[in-house]
Length: 275
Image (cartoon, rainbow, N blue to C red; front, side, top):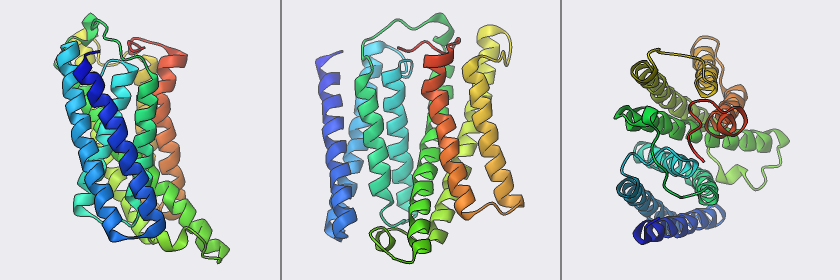
């Protein structure tokens, strides 16, 4: 790992930690000046993450998305910019506090994985690599936002049902706003997830001569896709909203996490190139 790349990653960790801490302070204090500082820090983190990914590209000579470390970093990057693009259009009270915690968690996970450079296997030597993996992970970024919104919904609903209006009630958005957040992020994430599966199938046809051969990661990607398809279908046909939609967003994200990490560690397959 080059010195520049190492220093950039340390800067990413530091600035993201500061952003997460500042959002936490804002969650408690509710001072607008603190929120502005937190947003500036998160934008800075997103820029540093981009620079770090570019430095990895220069270091490894291909799209840096073939190891566990690189995959989680790109996942954190996608979640960061998915949130910033969402925040550019919509304002959801204290959403950044929850999202920044998730981004920090992902970056901590990435720091625990090996950052060594390994040779790219022949099956991955294609321009389809950044297209397929990048689109899929950007979809995961928006689904991560739906996951955070689902957690916030359950916390707020619990406060309202208890009728005690404790710590979370004045700091969280309305249930309606959180349900709309879920719908938006779920829809955008599902579109990118679908594009990722289609691009992966086309790539598989070029690499192995078949569009689908039921590799464990392919199978779990399809399972995850169906979980979200059911959510979208039921939301727009059967009126799945509120608590049920929030729970499904959390369960869907659990499937995303297993597809990314669990499959590689537990089931193997041709997609398990990363260490």
